[in-house]
Length: 115
Length: 113
Image 1 (spheres, rainbow over the protein chains, first blue to last red):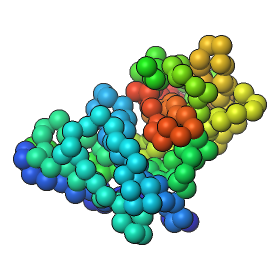
Image 2 (tube, rainbow over the protein chains, first blue to last red; image 1 turned 180 degrees about the vertical axis):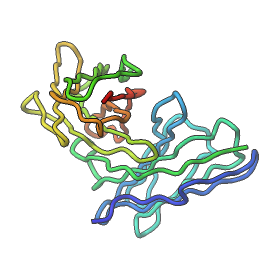
Image 3 (cartoon, each protein chain N blue to C red; image 1 turned 30 degrees about the vertical axis):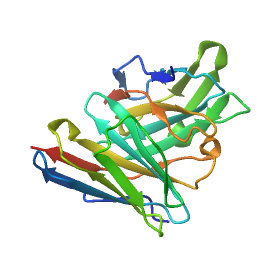
Image 4 (spheres, rainbow over the protein chains, first blue to last red; image 1 turned 45 degrees about the vertical axis):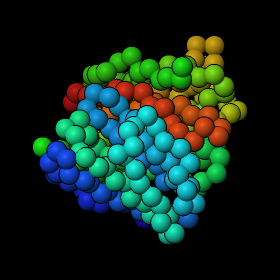
């Protein structure tokens, strides 16, 4: 069974540009989560999508947005890039529904570098 | 406030030695607890999880963790470390219906041959 996949592996942008990151969940999973892993800050929750709807977001500005497609894959968009957006962006998927009994499985991440 | 603390940023052990990685949490309700491992350049792999029941949880790769409610701890242990265990380890907490994990800042494990 294929795991969570993310593309691209690396992405280099300049300040003010937009970045689009993609994630394909494990087959059968309907929930997708996005996390930012910045150096020294650990993993910070960004967004949760389930059944095509945004269910919750973390403490990030509105220029971080995304969507989930009918096939449950997801995009994360970061507008007006700033230097501090440089980080590893991790996507995770789960079966959906109650997180308490739902384990999240992570992809390998996209390394975003903003110059 | 909900939080997870991993007090040790770096730990170095010799191959074959025992290991204990500490995790303390602050959470208002009954927590669900997880340990993940991240090898360089890779995503997070689930080692084990605790939802309820037996407070000693067995995971993959010979790891185990013990939930101690009175100490708000969920420490990860392994009796004999292998060189391939060198990685970064993350503890996380969540609750039913809260739909987001709160991660600790990680502990980087170095294994000496």
